[in-house]
Length: 177
Image 1 (cartoon, rainbow, N blue to C red):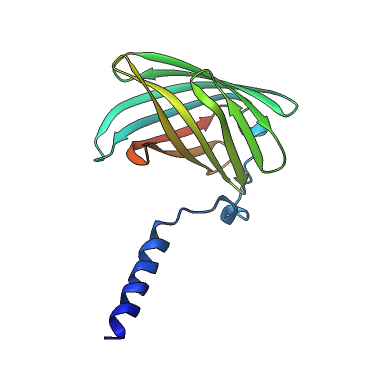
Image 2 (cartoon, one colour):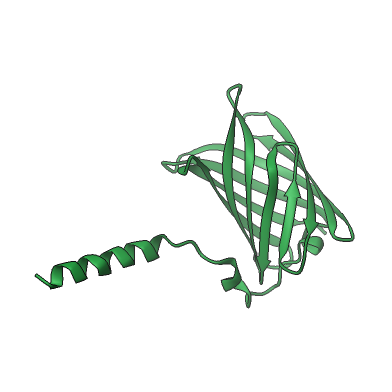
């Protein structure tokens, strides 16, 4: 009988550990090092998709990104073209706070985005005012960006509302030039 409570605690601890999110600082030794001011300076083309919570691809898109920096403040102009022919535009203002921390704003971002970068990785969090069928929903975005080489970055974003997973955005970015 003593074995049962110990087995239960061990199983619960394993389950909780399996749910733990990765820590961005665990990527500190990964190369090449991601410098947002360098990567997001100039033109970037990106291709992505949105999958709902069951994994079905419900929207595909391309993004033309133009970035520029003045000191520690950058502007990212993102022009989206979706598979259904619709378009959208988001303009980010990103501020480098220190070696590892960034903040960002955009017209459809509620409050301020926060990001932390270590090694080749940026963990970026924000709330996006997302228009769906004429209604606006404030959705939590949890972005993980990984610099693969000097030109290629991969981005996975989980979308949540009230803690429930709505879906995921996958994006491949390629720096031009």
